[in-house]
Length: 354
Ligand code: COI
Image (tube, rainbow, N blue to C red):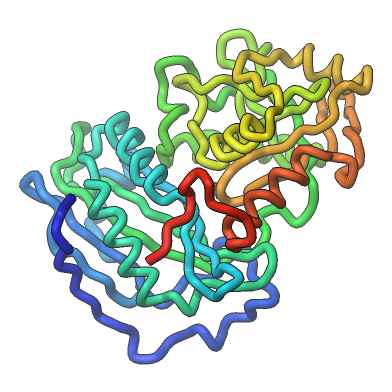
């Protein structure tokens, strides 16, 4: 455990908070007053600072711009029913950031640095944590390469930053997804398990094509045969078939989602049958056809649980059971909310208070 770190704080002269309509918060467009920055040089993180949220100045040759050496995280802070600020499983995000960083040749951010930076930033901007239903303060930690060098090699300089933004729902309605059998999000041995910026850039074009066909998002399949389900959009994907919760097993192509882990943990705790395994497109389509597909949803930090209302495959759309009949996804969403709000016991130690 590191000692308390020396983080300088420069506050805004006047807050922008009164300009924000907390009754109508879009996702990811409104940023809190401050941000955290640390710089990495000569093998260490230094100049830890909280400063007003503002544009960055960087060299036009900065390697992140050219080669995408960058990783990020996403987590959320809430106000519980007693008005206390809480963060959901930040230790898991701190660990995952470093798994992603290792894959992208980015230096580790010590967990204590991550936790203290996040905590101090939240203390400064705690009034930005919204308290209405289905809202949260989205926390975005990220690390990127800063070398002013256009050759290709791991950068020597990096920046670790955290910005935060009050958010409402990520999807305004249950989603229509298309099973993607041409393009690939991640291949074995690639960067799919890392929260690497480039993974998201590469997903945009196939998603745009699906959106033109009327879908909200894609269901990604394996890169080799396009036979097995992998993820949905930027989320993990889960199905309930014949009362069994099924999700693709974690692998080098699948992000080990923290919401994914929370859902699986709760399901197992409730005695539900849970399977982390390969799941073929055929299995899902057959289940949709014969009525054994009871539930399908994406699980991720931004959306929490995104109900899937329709699955498109080879030009055929399969409509899934009405959302109000989805016993599992509705129950697990409620259970996670209850833990965050302090209405239910935090028996897995997921809630961080400061
Ligand atoms: C998250 O769920 O936090 C994500 O990574 C989605 C993000 C790309 C908005």
